[in-house]
Image (tube, rainbow, N blue to C red; front, side):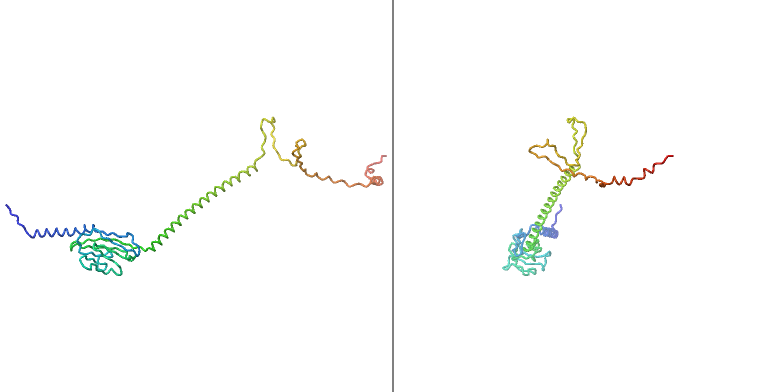
Length: 278
């Protein structure tokens, strides 16, 4: 039967390893539980900003707040030790800021400015082996810039809406103008052209009893309607005929003694034709 002997060195090594493992694991789980709530969520210039800390254990030795990505003496805002009569001690990054710390680890920034924007970190020390950490990004907006941006965005939106309406109305007016002018041109090009090129219709109906084809021709002179066709109510239509042609030119009058002159001066031609016979 073997007797097991207890060695104090082995027990102390196992206990030390377990304590070291718990010390490494606890800060990770505790850091996930600690978080910061920003009130209001979108702080404006000259507003009071509250960074409320949640998930803090019941026993905490001190709280240290930092402004920046690193946690060092140059970025330390203040430290708060609940057990001291004057628990708050300002750090190098405090400057002219008006910050008040609370026993639960929260902090109040009075009259926040755009220069106060950045990353705020807090470290809560529970014991020398356990420190809880949390951080939050803060952006303090300038109210004037926000209002100018909102007014500019509103002006751009209004300009876009008005421009769209104007372009749409111009397009509608152009389409309506094209439709109206197209119809007017179609009607104008149809009626006069057809009436000018059409010929007089020829009556070719078999009911007239005449197989001849007649064509209506315009008369060169104005005609006078017969008297029988006139009615008492309608006066006869008299047309004016063209003037008659001028008479031919008359021959010149011969003098009265022309016959006596012929007898006194006969034409010798007929006598010259007489030949004497022997």
